[in-house]
Image (cartoon, one colour):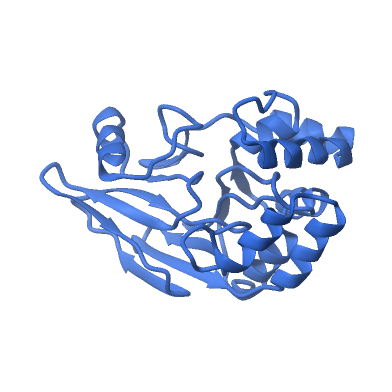
Length: 246
C-alpha cells in the first residue's frame, strides 16, 4: 500500500494544492490526514473541500478542528489562535461544521501494525517533542509505525528496545527505508504552517510493502496565503510566520 500522509493543513489552500500538484503523478492507495484541517489560515472552506475529494482516506480530528466546530471552547488556546478559530466558525457552513464534528478521535489503526494519531496515541492534544515523550509512547502502545502530527515538525523516532534515535531534515526531499526490527513514530510535518525554519509545505509518502518513507516539501505562493490572512482579517503574525517557517 502507498499512503500520502498530510497533517496540520491549517486552512492553507495554496500549500495544500502545491503538495498535491508535486505528487500528482504518483498513485496512492490511501490518503491519511492527521488532523487540524482548519485554524490559523484563511481558506477553511477550500481546504475542507479539497480533503474530502481525497479518496479512499482515513482522516482524524485535531485540536483546531474541535474548537473551530465548537466541540471545545478554545479556552486553552492563545489569543491569536482562539481569534482565528472563532473567525473560522463564522465562515463555515453547517455542512462543513458537521464534517469536522464527525471526524473521529485518534488513535486509529488503519493497517497491519499502522496507527494514526494527531498528537499522541494516549492523548490527541499531547505534543511529542522529545525522546522522553517518544519513549513513553513506545512503552505504552504496540505498533510498528505510528504517524502523528500536532508539532508541525517533520521527523521520525525509531526504537529497538535498546536505542531510541531521531531522524530529521529540513531538506525538500529526503527519505529512508524502515528497518524491520525497529518501531517508528513519524511526523510528516505541517502542510500549512511548518515550524522548523523551512517555510515550504511538507508531507510524507509511505510504501508499506517496500517499508520506504519519503518526506516531500513544496514551494508555494506564500504571498497569496498571507494576503488572504490579512484580508480576512486575521492577526498579522499568522501571515508573518508563514515566510519564516516558525
